[in-house]
Length: 165
Image 1 (cartoon, helix red, strand yellow):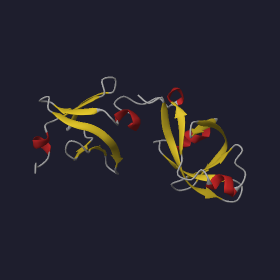
Image 2: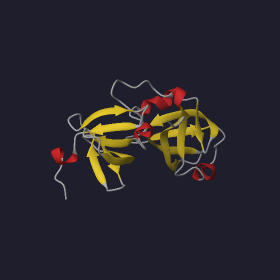
Image 3: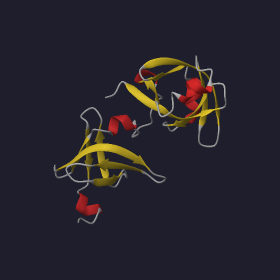
């Protein structure tokens, strides 16, 4: 498991005083209110304050006081140590922990490794690229078990819930 969790991605600058626009990578964007610092490229950067727009967070970072300095941070991720992560409800997982889990069906057949998790309006989708590309809806009637410690996800056999090629 990764010791760092991504909580945001800097997508643009905001104003002339070094603020940055951040796309939240957390279910609760208001958690930015509690952050004293984030890691950017592995370096600790203090969070001086934040305000909220429709779908973005405006963050003022310590020692970033000019738009030119903020510009250099575009497309970088804000991470936090796992120990500062929010407590998850039962049957909820960090996306970072689902990636690289191996998916098997209930018959023991290996489907592949989760390359990424696509978040949609209705449910997450586990994206497997190899050996064959498969998109698995993360629904309780399809995903029967998730064991993060063993890096293993069990699903119902694909033929039961999806037409095969």
